[in-house]
Length: 438
Image (cartoon, rainbow, N blue to C red; front, side, top):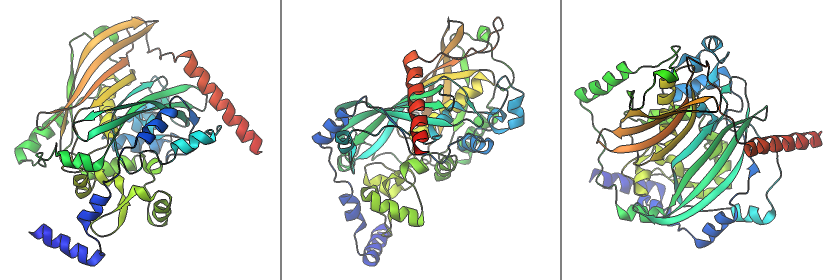
């Protein structure tokens, strides 16, 4: 009854009904025309001219990103420590490649493809269900990263959550200022109709997590026992198939965790999150991205990650994390295990369940394979996250490179020749267009 009274008071003051506002904001439908437009863009790669908040890997930017996933590894946080390692200087966790982008000049899309790209899936709820990431080079302090890419496939299928969904695959390639391929990512982005998702009520029975003092002691005991390999090399010869990795915990998830990850550099520029006059300008540019909250204030639809009332309006029982946060946690787990001398080459993850505000993720892993190829020593790992309800929320296949007693330091992976050619071509065109400007 108190909630009904508060809603009535808000309606009287703001001049609109909160429930009706949310209902209106969830009526967009997946159109066949949008699906066909998305397919017409497959395989068309363009340079990314937009810049993220972080365009260069400074010591402070690296440290802030690492702290954003709860990682205090001195390899990432202390320039003096990094100088004493095999890398010779501070490096960033490879997962940071996703949030570093300097503008890359390139040729524009043809007009007909610009039209196809405009307003795709407008008003349709989107979330990322995982991705495959491959790294070829470390992220050194003072490096800059440039990005190009595009759509890489579209699938339409039934969805338990929303009746029908569209999966769009996005491929991103990043290179450094030396034109070296650094990072390739293929992301699965799911589009669902908000009103359909709400009507299914699939997750309606999930209650917010509540913790006793004993529950928190159990979580804190895992934090206290976490082990970072650090400067002690983990040699390929000492690893055996079936070995268990030491446990890690992340959580309970709070809104503060979401904010701290944004502070570390994630998505603010990319998603158009802004304040005051910049927010006003953004509302004029993309009005469909904004939905009024219970106080009558237009706010970003993306607030599903911190506003549980809006999350409920699209069929979720409460606010939930970004998948990229869990991907960063997985990467933290991997870098703790490989140590300063190892290198994380591949990470393929799937988000099986939502990670809601208040949830805790217990991380465990196992060695499932090891092999030598072209002088490189690979170890394959399987990792999973299990929440406090006992649900497996995230699975991950990872491949890392380790040093050997017989052959010494890690030999970095060789990027495919076509990938290397693309990077040189895009960087050359960038230089030509800069020179043409004078």
